Every structure is written in C-alpha cells, then in structure tokens.
Length: 516
Image 1 (tube, helix red, strand yellow):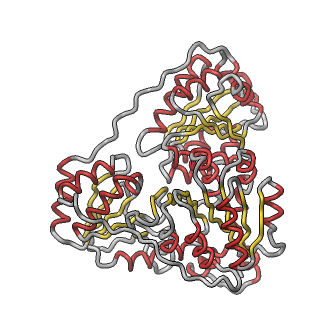
Image 2 (image 1 turned 30 degrees about the vertical axis):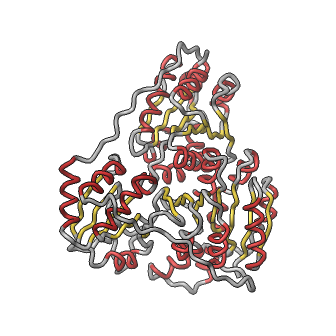
Image 3 (image 1 turned 90 degrees about the horizontal axis):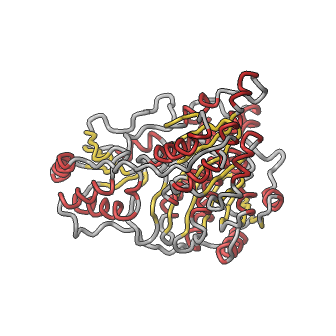
C-alpha cells in the first residue's frame, strides 16, 4: 500500500467517500489508487472552481465533507472563489492539493508556488504531509477539522513522494468534539428579554433554518410577537407551502435599514450583525439601528437548534401556532414576451415536491424571492460569499448528494459563464438538474451598482464592460456541446412548456430564457 491508497482508505474510514477532482501529474498515484479503493466515488470537474463549488453543494445537502483533488498551487488558485463561498456557507470541505516531490522542490520548477499561501485565506487548517507513513493520519485530522462546527475548510498538501512511497496503515477516524451548547443562563436571559415585549427581530442562520430548529423559531416568534428573519444569503433554508415563514433581510443596505427600523432588540441565532454587502457614498454600512440592543443566543459554532428548543420551552411557546407559508394561486397570462417575473411565476407553479432550488439569478430573482417561497416544499440554496459562478457547481454537488431530488438552478447568463463546465459534469453523472439561464445579455446587477455608487452611467466604455450581446451568447449550442439537452424560450408560453417538460423528465436539462 502506498501513501495515496492510505490517504484514500483513511478518508473513507472517516466517512468521506466522494472526491471532486481535476488532477495533474503530481496526483497520478492518487488517481491510480481510486481503482483499489472502490468505496471512493471520483467525480471529474473540467475546471477547479467547479470542483470546489461542487464540494460546497455536496456538503450543504449531505451534511458531511467531500474531498477535492487539485493540482498544485495554480489548480488550487483556480478554485479559490468557490472555496471562499464554501467558507462563507460554513460547508465542511477537505482539499487534497498535490505538490512536487520533496526532492524536486529545490529546483523551482515552473509549477512551483506557495501552495500554503494560496490556501490560508480560504482554509481553517493547512498542513503539508511529510511522509507516506503519516498521510493517513493527516487525512483523519483534516476530516476532523472540516467537521468541526459549524463546518470548516481543511487543506492537506500532498507532495508526490508521500503519495508514491510505501505506507504502513489506514488511520481510524478521530472523535469529534460535542457541539457546544448555549448556557442555560443565556437562554434564560434571552427569554426574559422576549417576555419584556420589545420590538424584536430573531436573525437566524445555519442549521436552525430547517427541521426542528425552524419549527421552534416559528413558535417562539408566534408566542412573543418577534419577527423571524434570515440573513440575505443563508446557505440553506427549508421553504415552500406549509413551512415556517421567514422574512429575508433585504440585499440593499438602505432597504435593510428601513426593514430593521424601530427594532429594539436583535437576537442573533448562529448569525452575525447585518452589514451592507458593499460601501456606498452616503449610505450606511452598519444596518442595525443605533438604539437597538444586540443579544446573542448562539454563536455560529454552537447548537442553534438545541438553543431554540430550550428557548421555546422557556417562553412557553410549545403550543404556539407558527406562521406558515401558504400556497397561493398564481395569476399568469401566457401571452407575450418572457420576463423575470413570469419565470418566477412558472417555477412557483410547477416546482415539484422536495426539490432543491439553487439561486444565482441576482437581479432577476431577488425581487421575486417571496413569490418563489410559496412553491411546493423545497430546499433553497444561496450564493453565500458573493463570488459569482457558484450555484451551477453547487447544484452539481447537491445532485451527487441527493440523486433522487429534482434540482432547479436559476442563474444569470453572466454568472453562468464563470463555471459553464458544470454542465459537462452534470451530463456525465446524469444528474437530475434543470438549469434556467436568464439571458438578459448583460451584467444587469452591475448596471444597478454603477448608479448606486454615483459613477457616471452614460459612457460607451462603461457600457461595453457590462453588456454581453456583441456577440450574444448561444446557450442552446453551449449546453448541447457540453452534453446537456438544451432549448431556448423567448415567450412565457414557450418557457412554461419547456419547464414542465423538464420537470417531467429525469436528467440534466438547460433552458435559455431570453428576456424581452
């Protein structure tokens, strides 16, 4: 057994059995070991940002880490944007980054780089193996770090000789620390504040936005009159008819400030105080009212579900009727050109039960978030770190984690071009993903930002940096070229026909939704 096989078997022993990868020469012994370790499922991505984003999506839906396999510093660097997003999502990920053999490092070969330096900004733990005898133990350590609440990024650098040299053993999984819990005194303190009748916002993030935590939060809000709010880009939330209604903190800072106006008490539950995504002239960055008290029920590493269950008991809310989302009839004429609102209406009407929606529609979907929430019960995944090119890879990883669930990706054409290679992996793995590309032929959100920062907006040079119609992107040809059945819809009626057909069939599909 060599080091690469020891590494793989140790990962599998720690319940990491999927590897998203884009390997190179330094990782060939890892690749060869995949034939000996059948329990590890390899998934090829054609660009590293697809690989890292897929690991993020897998972790969000599987609740455990996947491994990534990346080639030296440049390969890792290609995946940094979606590792940034994964870190902001608190997704557990184990990166395996190949490096030159130790004996080769002194020659400063063309691909030599500071791998650890690339890794540190997006990693909670970085380590380079020094011997094939320790690779398995290093892998077990990496998995333990990744699984530490609320989820972390662990990067293990694997010099080629530690992969090809002889190894002695497979490492057993390391015990995980028990999830930290909020102190009883903290729960009692928050309960007292809620009973005082202040105008309160419960700001929730993390696992408490689904399951028993979400139900408990809903009952607390119903009993105390508090508003139940999630942050703008919560990694995963259970939404849809019959689920607990949660307000979303608005994206634009001045709108969020108005949204929070009059709040006397902000209770953070796995969340941080809200701030504006960007700084703007004469607009606030800090969004909480100056006279609002901020109180923490749980920090991100603490068990928010357990804390909410205890708080529910403390305020005697066990029998309160939480405010639920109701399915509402969608009034839509199918005549006329396609627009973002009609896409949201059609998706809302026809989304199947227990689907997964991954949203990177940005300017085309933000206004219709509440409407989409009235669809059949589903999981909703967000772009957490703001680095676009995230949700097509996230959908890919979610499809590996949840092969029996329909996945719908809503993505702008500009964002989709960042990680278009995701479509190939979806086709190769026959994942049940429907990608709706909003073809608005431009970076529309940046047109808004140009105005918001007070910059001039009428110049030809600025316009050229934000439009995508010379030449226009051909998503049908692109999707088909990557192995995905693709159609174009230019009217409401055509889009509904395409979307309902995609919902009725299994396998990857792409709909280019041309906005009028």
